[in-house]
Image (cartoon, rainbow, N blue to C red; front, side, top):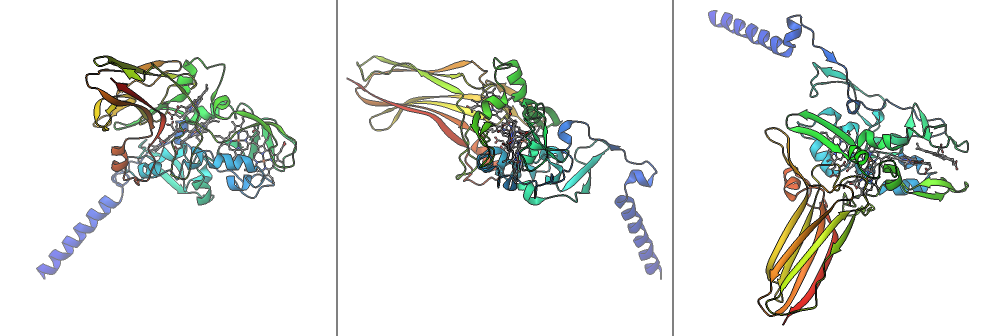
Length: 402
Ligand code: HEC
Ligand code: HEC
Ligand code: HEC
Ligand code: HEC
Ligand code: HEC
């Protein structure tokens, strides 16, 4: 009897405890949780869009049935990789990645499974989610697609207001200006102590010598003359492959590269006398970028390698330089150093070697540009096939010491 009674008390206690923990404590005690509205622009998606009249969907693939060249160009751009990118997907899966990571990578609400109504007590890790009835998974895979930049208030935004189009067009050259680019390519937010979202391509451009002369669009979407759709008269048009770093996202996708650096070297003679010194320097100058190089993602860097080998291929001497930022992420995100090249800035890497042995020599000079370190690839469990760097300068000098 007592045993039975005891069991009942225990069950009641367990039940009460469960109720206490399952229900929010504040609600039990009559204190409602506060839903904080989203405030920063990158906390919000572009509202759900309807398919503009005359079109079958918001997909780039469907814009591409008419705008063939635009589609083919965009397909090779990193914008088309902004969702499927392996590094992005790996980072998104981490608990430390808050909901708004996706707002610059799949900016349209139609590309997002949930509508975020606000934050519980202002906590970015506690968004108030609601299923999005217009969510389109195929649209999500396209990342930053035609509609991300061109569709607002259910119409196509253009720069001329063309009346030849089979879809509604609104002329808005201010929307389709560098302000659109900067809305994503400039962020400075300390999200949590160990997560800082910081890249300032927009600010770097505004502070640099190209401001007022060339902008994001004039360099990254160069002008051409062609028809927007086969059979229509040729007019002013812009390339849509968004060339830049040229570091591919996978083996089969080779995005176009824009050249920012010029390289200058001192001479290497064919012959040296015993006990001469080889003096060599390689200078990198950021002549063509409208911002610092590297720009954007703080993980990017360049390595400058100067290696001297003898006839047997043995390394006699070597030096390595690095251009980029260095960060410490734990316990608090902190930038340790930053020697990115400003627009117009030059930096030299020098090498001096006393030549005290006769024979043939090879001086190898190489510059590589990296998206991330190999350690970061391992840490993020990204496939080894993911390309992390490209060679942008490679020159070898043969000489003999007699
Ligand atoms: C059925 C064919 C067709 C489809 C599909 C189509 N367009 Fe067009 N579009 C045109 C034609 C034709 C023009 C006008 C060409 C001209 O003015 O020379 C045009 C013009 C434009 C312009 C220029 C507007 C301006 O103000 O100058 C933009 C931008 C544009 N389309 C974007 C899109 C996007 C984005 C999509 C997909 C969401 C799309 N189009 C789908 C045929 C199409
Ligand atoms: C909706 C946000 C968004 C907008 C708007 C946007 N971008 Fe991007 N852009 C991105 C993201 C995100 C990536 C990187 C994708 C990735 O690496 O997976 C990117 C990549 C790029 C790259 C390639 C960088 C590289 O590594 O080579 C260039 C160039 C670029 N954008 C230029 C522009 C220009 C020019 C505009 C304006 C016409 C623009 N972007 C508008 C978000 C945006
Ligand atoms: C990252 C933003 C971005 C994306 C993505 C994008 N566009 Fe554009 N597009 C622009 C901008 C900016 C202009 C206007 C450039 C100017 O006039 O200075 C433009 C112009 C156009 C024009 C007008 C003619 C011209 O070339 O200037 C057409 C047509 C067009 N885009 C179609 C497309 C199609 C189709 C896609 C997808 C395959 C697409 N765009 C993707 C930003 C974008
Ligand atoms: C004067 C021409 C010019 C202007 C203006 C310009 N860019 Fe660039 N941008 C370049 C060149 C060249 C590169 C290639 C850098 C390199 O060597 O990797 C580049 C690289 C980039 C990259 C890749 C950065 C990296 O380190 O890999 C992004 C992103 C980018 N630009 C965005 C923008 C945006 C956004 C704007 C406007 C605020 C802009 N650019 C203005 C010329 C320009
Ligand atoms: C304000 C807009 C914005 C937000 C928010 C944003 N990104 Fe990005 N992201 C970009 C842009 C722009 C690029 C393009 C390259 C650059 O600037 O280096 C990019 C590039 C990337 C890349 C590719 C880097 C490379 O070297 O190719 C990854 C991965 C990434 N973002 C992850 C994230 C994660 C994770 C979050 C959330 C913590 C996030 N992003 C939030 C704008 C944004």
